[in-house]
Image 1 (tube, rainbow, N blue to C red):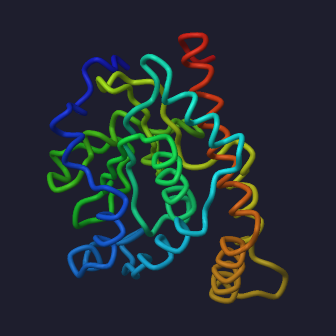
Image 2 (image 1 turned 60 degrees about the vertical axis):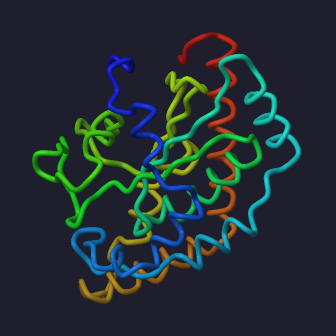
Length: 238
């Protein structure tokens, strides 16, 4: 698409939340009364997000890389993140994105994806959800399995003048989520549908608390840094 016609203007970017503001917002009655994934009730993930951020540190190479990138002419200076805390991918990667931005001195702004209602639209618009950020989400839809999806998180990297550089979507390439989670949630011999759902929910939560989610968070940072390096060095992404 033509990135010069983006709805993300300097004025719009400035309306996004900082990480601290977002974490505080997650715990508010205003947020908790919104529909969660599939219309389910939300829960307060603010303490988890804060603890994840406080525990997360970039390694020496990642730190040096983001500082080098941020110091280049027309290097990354602003990050726009589209997120919802009901998403396990957001809970994993938003703290990482906040730490990456803080380490590189990048200005980060977080936008919620949905309004009061959960959106399952493959082509979101403000006409159907005027209280959402559907117009921003529509610029960064994820094309997968022959369809477009409102996959989150999305992290869009811009120059100081808000020129588009690159965006990261949902999870790093080494995390084969559909295959891994599909195996976890698949019914096993002798399980009822309800038993399979309860066991799958439990095992997926255990996966989120395992070292592998930290591995994939680090991989997300590496993928972002590598893509930004290629963008600045070559001028485009392959």
